[in-house]
Image (cartoon, rainbow, N blue to C red; front, top):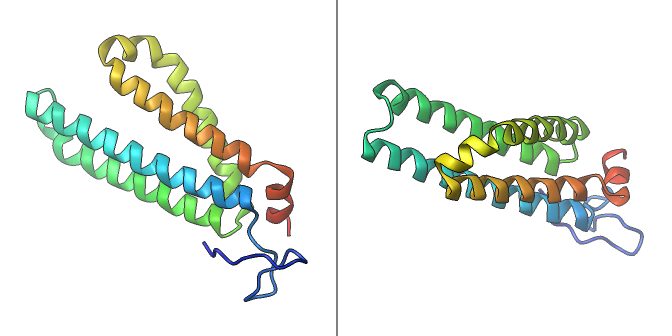
Length: 146
């Protein structure tokens, strides 16, 4: 993501293309914060389960590979959003809506099993929602339509 400062006309000083709006830059920062927080939360939980012997042997390897691949995809998706790819912004919206649905369906059971992890998940989801609101503000939408 370029952090070119906009000129008075709203264009980047370096390239003559429309400057990335503040709402998009802030949303990208929030998405990276959520990515890092979510990855750390899952890693700590996974390692804690391994230490307590709760993680089955097959999940010690395949689970970590799946987590890594999922977070790599999430990182690339954020990068594509930052580069102005409207399809990536829409895909992130759809994935977040699925995430909200599954979070609501499993919340009560998961909260009883591990309240701290569920509250951390809620925080990450909330951060993603704030970023989505920023990504769909008028200034952001206009920039994606350029």
